[in-house]
Image (cartoon, rainbow, N blue to C red; front, side, top):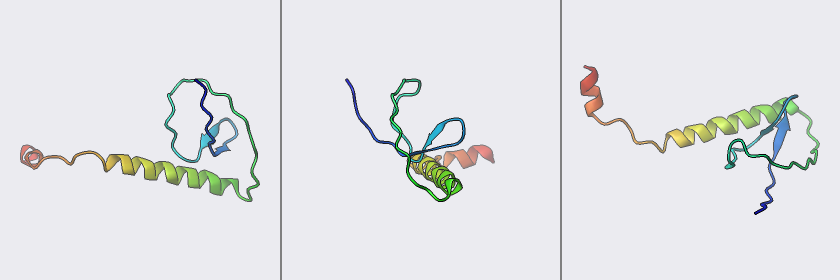
Length: 76
């Protein structure tokens, strides 16, 4: 089955880095079609992508259950 998905990314000189997290299997081969957007500041795009990735990771960490109260007792 072929699925078409548009992904925004920036090129870091070696690889395309997605601006938003992707839900795609690691190691799978994809066919890329490239449409260049005009950007005045590629560093800003890189920083924005890093910030979005950090925000995504924090969001995922917040889904985890907190440590139980017994954990503090074990450390004492």
